[in-house]
Image 1 (tube, protein in one colour):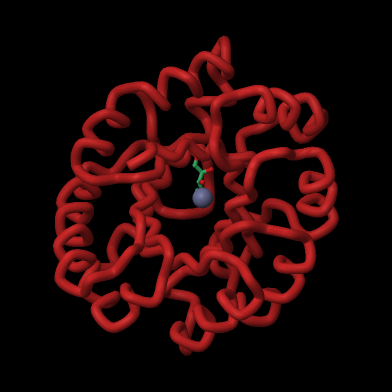
Image 2 (image 1 turned 90 degrees about the horizontal axis):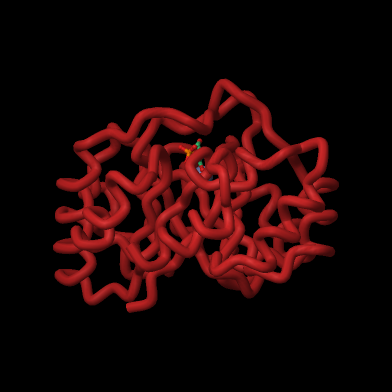
Length: 216
Ligand code: DX5
Ligand code: ZN
């Protein structure tokens, strides 16, 4: 399976997004990860539709939107209109997760669900077969640059087991505190996609950092 690298825009230079997106376009990154925060589901606010629209106009990579917002159902159509590739909602934010997943797929996007660090994989027993991707948070959502939570490795093992048991095609993405110290181990544990914000954008040479992550 191809290893999918998704740098997170959250750590880019918001005073000059065009420059950082052009770097992403030239890089070996597969997707651009967009962290949308509402100040309610998480204690931080990031960016919304005007920024995502502008990003879509210049970014040649697929857009992987991670919604850290309450009531994500309200906005599914707007993300589809912009042309987002995959839409990712938090399990903890969705009262009617099955309906939300169906609505994302109906709008032609890949449907993904995210679990906070404290949420066990077992809650996905009756939905894992319906999603294209499961994202395991390896930090508490809300901020870039936090330390990786080691328990993530055992959650990957649980998730792999559940995916196999249910005959699901879901891929596994890990988000938070990813760097050269844990990336290889995460891929070996069963991750298909790694999100990296701080480690990519605050490195000396983001282009080679992305290439290194791809081949680690
Ligand atoms: C955190 C976000 C992450 C964040 C990752 O709430 O979901 O995508 O940007 O940043 P790093 O890689 O710096 O931990
Ligand atoms: Zn994210």
